[in-house]
Image 1: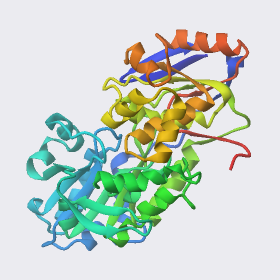
Image 2: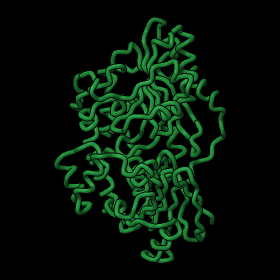
Image 3: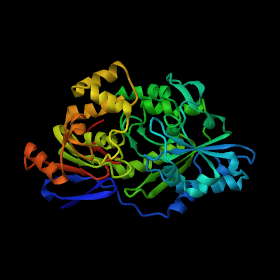
Image 4: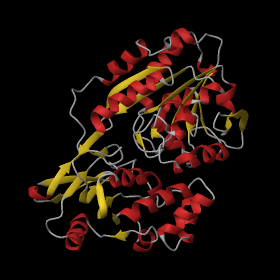
Amino acid sequence: MDIGISFGKEQFHVEIEEKSIQSILIPQEIPKVDESEELWRAIKNPVGTQRISEIVQSDETVCIITSDVTRPCPTRKMLVPVLEELASAGVPDENICIAFALGAHRKHTLEEKKKLVGEDVLARIQCLDLDMDDCVDLGTTRAGTPLHVFRPVVEADRRICMGNIEFHYFAGYSGGAKAILPGVSTHAAIQSNHKMMLSEKAATGHLAGNPVREDIDTVPELLPIDCIFNVVLGPHKEILRAVLGDPILAHRQGCAFLDTIYKFPLDEPADIVLVSPGGYPKDLNIYQAQKALDNAAHAVRKGGIILWVARCQEGYGSEKFTEWVNDAQTPQDLIDRVRKKFELGGHKAAAMAKVRQKADIFLLSDLDDAAAENLFCTPVPSLEKGLKMARERLGQDARIVVMPHGGSTLPVIQGDK
């Protein structure tokens, strides 16, 4: 079989005998929708709230919080109906601001902002990157997280949180109030929330009892969110479903739809998992591409091999992550360190270490060999060579699971809880 795997903006191909393939995790085919019609359908049919044009008054200020450039959220498309709704409510452009939810990520270039919102919107509406030095203390959440949020977001009369819903390796799912925490919050707030990832209940695709997600969902108690506007995307970044409304009710509706497409039951774990985050921008750096590695870990057997295909042209993507991996001599060092003192950035290094303790990781990337080995990965020069090395290690009869959209797909071994 000819298997296509995304690498940045390229597509690599490899031939694998059909008898060796246990499963190829391809998102369920659903009828294509007109993206504009689907966005407007959600706008006109809010879940648990009124329409935006009915919520906002003409003299009020509005902050739209949306994803940064490392996310596949189609902000530019989603802004069209949102801004039309605000215009129909009589809200002038000068009363609107767009805040990019950077979380712990770097600030945008001008060109990246243009890509996200379009030149016209960038020219007429204030577009701001999160500034952690300009945040407001809103108190603490029920879980004790100090909620310090970007001032323009706090001072706006109304808040609309945009984003896309996909699986998240410890928050369960992205989307919802996650645009606020961690999106436009300080390092202290993010670290307090993210340290709960050490809980066994903080897992991919889990909502009930997940302490990270439950903390995020209490944000509206301290900072009201007037509505969320989230989308579920297809494998080619096309909009499949949109939801608008209450931060909990609308979000859960989107999560349920995501499950029907991207959750995959497997009878047993594989010997080898061939995984790509899904290409650019999900493999922009190791920090982002790690999500696919974590999803792949759900499909591989103990002692198996994950062949991780991620371009990572921006390298590791986090200074703190880099510091942690540079200081570690073994994967266990990283796990011990995060248990003693949680640090944002280091947490992803520890998450990778947990995967590495389960399986070997072969990495095809733009990183040099030393940088890959520093991650406790085995660098491979090509897809073909990596697969050959894995089969030489585990045997020619090794069973293979292929995850071309590993950043989005979640394997679930039958019987696992």
